[in-house]
Image (cartoon, rainbow, N blue to C red; front, side):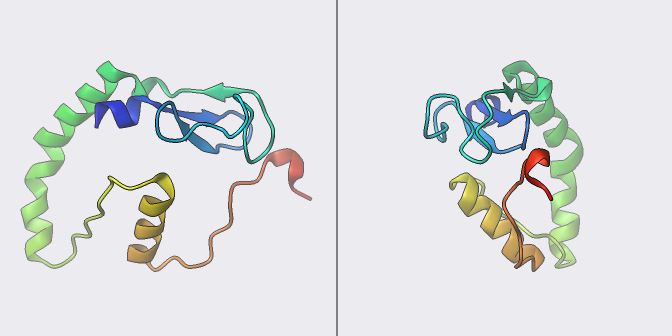
Amino acid sequence: VVERISGRFICAKCGATYHDKYRLPKNDMICDVCGSTEFIRRDDDKPEAVRERLKAYRAQTEPLLPYYRERGVLIQIDGRGSIEEVARAIDEALGITDLKPPVCEDDKS
């Protein structure tokens, strides 16, 4: 989990998501969506921050899972697939069917 989260980076212009190991831009550090060369990493995606987030999850969120499972309102998504597969599973679980890819602010008209 730490490797997957801490490897993420996003296009600073359009928000397209990439990963150091699992999904690099097709052209060397040029965004596939908008062509920008500016990328950022969130501070809370650094390995130490991820470990703290996991610790907080285990202490605060994980204990609530049985409560929501018993009431039939817990939706679980397998996050081990590609970004697209996981996003599609979330969209399907939430009943979202008409999503558009990210668009750069400069491209909106």
